[in-house]
Amino acid sequence: MSTLTEKPSWQKLKSHYEEVKNLHLRELFAEDKERASHFTLEAAGLYLDYSKQRITKKTMNLLFALARECQLEEKRDAMFSGEKINSTEGRAVLHTALRNCGDKPIYVDGHDVMPDVRHVLAKMADFASKIRNASWRGFSGKAIKNIINIGIGGSDLGPAMAYEALKPYSDRSLTVRFVSNVDGTHLAEAVRDLDPAETLFIIASKTFTTQETMTNARSAREWLVKALGEAAVKNHFVAVSTAADKVAEFGIDTANMFEFWDWVGGRYSLTSAIGLSVMVAIGPENFQKMLSGFYAMDRHFAEAPIEQNMPVIMALLGIWYNNFFGAESHVILPYDQYLLRFADYFQQGDMESNGKSVTKEGEAVDYETGPIIWGQVGTNGQHAFYQLLHQGTKLVPADFIGFAKSHNPLGDHHAKLLSNLVAQTEALAFGKTRAEVEAEGVTGVLVAHKTFAGNHPTNTILAKELTPEVFGSLVALYEHKIFTQGIIWQLNSFDQWGVQLGKVLAGRILPELTAAEEPKLNHDSSTNAIITYLRKAR
Ligand code: F6P
Image 1: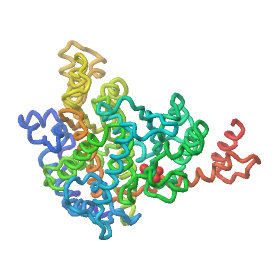
Image 2 (image 1 turned 120 degrees about the horizontal axis):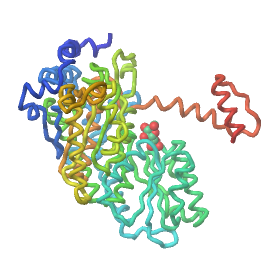
Image 3 (image 1 turned 60 degrees about the vertical axis):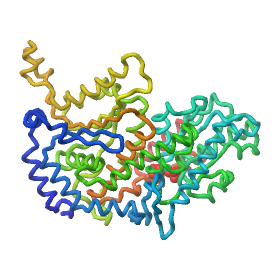
Image 4 (image 1 turned 90 degrees about the horizontal axis):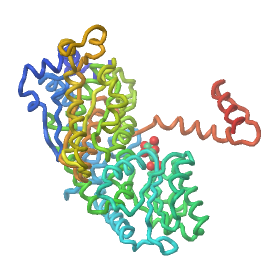
């Protein structure tokens, strides 16, 4: 047995689960009229109500004990202080340094990284301002009107999600697009209506070797050179990377490269230079406000006691369902159209971090680790998959996210949106009993169909408005939730070896698909047949 499941708090949680697994939220709320106030907290501009979770005070106390037994506080402090906690890659994990608005130095190998962080932020601000005030111009003298970020994974999802989230703060005269897929359609559709003379490409890649990004970058370069000539590249291409040599090799002047460092994980890089497209769109001041929101949640996570620590509480609730109730997935449901990419972003953030089955020490785990993350903006999900949430056989813990004020106060749209958010959490928790259905005059087989079991756990996360600060806090909240769960599951949340094998095999298959001569195929019979089919049908 692993050391995790042997821990006294884990064992206690196991027997406690047997005691409480059948308790219904209806009973829990009936027993304690003040339940909401016991399980609500505010931090960094966010309000979390977790009273509609299948927990008692004892559950939480046992979960807090588990966090302590797993030395969460010590390990959290190790991350913030720059220890090399990414053990398989020998790297520090310091995305928190990128938004450190305080004046304390942060050391990696004895070097204070804060002056470097501030230098790059200032360089980004200078560049963003030049694009916004048209003092940086295209090769033919035209102002830049289109920004295309080319990147994938963390070098795409973060800026793409943040750009959508903060659109109300963006310069609407700019067209900002994100190209990630190696499918040529993505790039072709992104540039088809654009004038190359007004288009700037940001090539965002930590390694500057990723196949998808380099393929898209080369094709973008060809598109531009075809229209404006080779000499135009310097006005229309900038890079964001940790690899200056590879940027230069590609033909981008390293003076137009925005640096970040190996201690920034791809999926935690939004607040590094990877956020350049967002800064161009919303301006340096709003970007700084976003960083201050991240910082506020970082401080809360670093300083608040475990019992009042929002990311820790959310992480522990996730463990409760994942490891004790056997829930396989977790759904994120933002009731705000601007957060339409939020669940996609944390699909990578969470699943690439904690989708692992060996511990840091390389031991196979004998417990469940990271859940499947999915989601959709409200109210669209209600007309798609909520049927399963309400009456299906799966337990799917859910986060509902909403804002009191809308950026688009159109008639009664916002009140309707919010009423749906609140109604869903109420319906999921309390359901509708047979007796209630029958009292409405329903009879026969329809009674069963119209009954809702309820007892579906939800968090409600609220804020006044989706400002850059609130957005920053919200993203940091989920980042630290993922960190906390990784600590408890004893994982290295900061590597991603699981993406390697597919990359290697694709490299082998590419020439087999494209060779003029019929290749000798040495795969299994299925893979051989698929390659043969594709070669014939191409
Ligand atoms: O999917 C694997 C991965 O390494 C991610 O972790 C990363 O965000 C993405 O590829 C892109 O990598 P890069 O920024 O080096 O192009």
